[in-house]
Picture 1 (cartoon, rainbow, N blue to C red):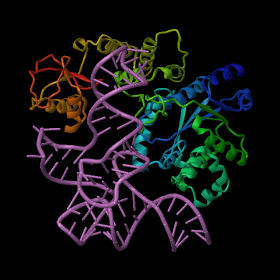
Picture 2 (picture 1 turned 180 degrees about the vertical axis):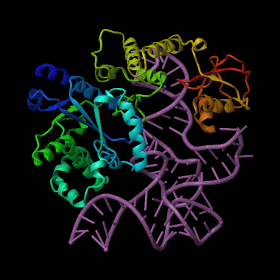
Picture 3 (picture 1 turned 60 degrees about the horizontal axis):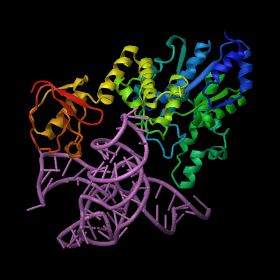
Length: 392
RNA sequence: GGGUAGGUACCCAAGUGGCCAACGGGGGCAGACUGUAAAUCUGCUGACUUAUGUCUACAGUGGUUCGAAUCCACUCCUGCCCA
């Protein structure tokens, strides 16, 4: 095992807060593997790069020989973490949560070492908890403490509802720490309050409080809001290589340095042309979650399609005409067969009239026209998607 | 429990009998411009193979009316004040 200062040096990289470095040093100094907790709520089936920030930190701990405890919040997911939210989360059924949990852990192991990770479901202790215990737990936290939280405070002030189950969330997350006897808990910076509740509860149970470590939140593709599935501004770990590459290319320039740091754990070369820097970011990310080969392919594909604007020689999904020959029908059919996406006639019409639909570079702006479709021709559907006609 | 203000499209929000598929903003999509992005400008943003057309939609159910998001009744839901 590395020396304490060396470990701390690695672990402190890229974090926002650490309560406290002294406590962490003391724990590390004992020379025994620490129990590192990260709780994730399977509210959606996919993990994205935002979640991966925490997982990468865990991996560092894991590589240093510590024990990772990944808590799957099957129970807390049904409440939904109110952190940073301005409205109550829509409830999920338990079946949905379990299904999500399954794919979730699979994806977490794209980053973590499966063999060395302890995975527990918090439903295993909350599901059967007697109401008496719930009351006791609740007695330990005051309403005033809860209302200090920015998100609750804002909601109260704005007259938006705050449901009582939502204020249970921090208590439950804190209790998780007691149950798994964590030495360190990791979370996004919005988790600070919740993690600190865990410290309080541990102290009350006569345990040594966990060290609290928070990480920056990764902004999503829009560059402003936190990356999240519900906002649709995320890059999924299992996104197809080309999607992953394309999405990363669409992030605002200002965000690149942060992505380099949090997604790749690297420092961006500020001297590099932004375009090149972004391509490398995208390629490295694809290489991490897919393969080097895939990364190279994506990059070449990107260069042909966008940098050289040479759709003709790019590799595109092939598309075979259906019954209908008019532009409107073909567009709808192409979306459906090549991308499994149903678009309404209205949407198709809007794309056509907006000039998005192009056949070999020529705009097809009349929905009812029946142009001469030829095998090998390139039909552009929208910014990112084109198809190549096969048989006619 | 009492009083009171409300519930309009993805979100905020206007509209208070016909001119309403519903102003405006945000968001989203597309085009031009680019470096892919940002910024800017433009168009679009309920569904139906554009139709002076039909259907579905202004919390829900019923009603009044030639005609309702708009009026009435009841129901459900939320905020605020009081208990």
